[in-house]
Structures are given as C-alpha cells and as structure tokens.
Length: 108
Image (cartoon, rainbow, N blue to C red; front, side, top):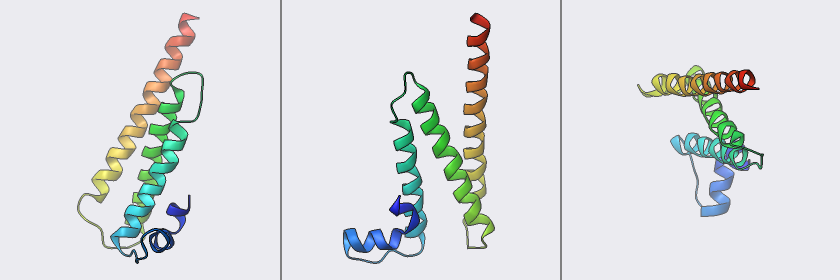
C-alpha cells in the first residue's frame, strides 16, 4: 500500500536513490497491481477471487490513468487508448459475470 501512496519514499528506503517523473507513475501502477493480486489471492470457495482480482486491476488502472490524463500532466498518445482498453476489459468481465450468474440461476 505504501508503494501506491509514496513511491519516492519506497525508492529511497529500498534502493537508496530518488524516484521521479515516470518512475512515480509506474510505482503507483505497481501498487495497484499488488492490491489486485491480494484481491485475486483472497481465499474464496470458487474462482470468484481471480475474477475480482482482474476486475480490481482493470478498474484501478483505468481510474489512475484517467487521473493522470485530466490532471494536466504531459501524456503520450497511448494514454487514452489504454483507458479505453481497461474500461472494455472491466465491462467485459462484468458482462460475463452477470451472464454467468443468470445462467446459473436459470438452471437452479
């Protein structure tokens, strides 16, 4: 969680060097990835934990990339397509989950 909040502090503590610029962005994305892995590995009875892990990663990455884009920082040409891809993945996961739930309820 600290990687998400303060990548420069983690960089100093782990590697005795400063992190700046794109390193902070990558560090925060790595922090969201760690949170998503924790969600994916949460013990549940079935495969729901992997679904929630993938959904968590897509949503958090999308939200953070949107934050970067609207903050006014210089961005590359692939930032907004990456936001769209993460949104599409999240929408696809939710659609699959809702469809699957409806199929299971009909069989019962």
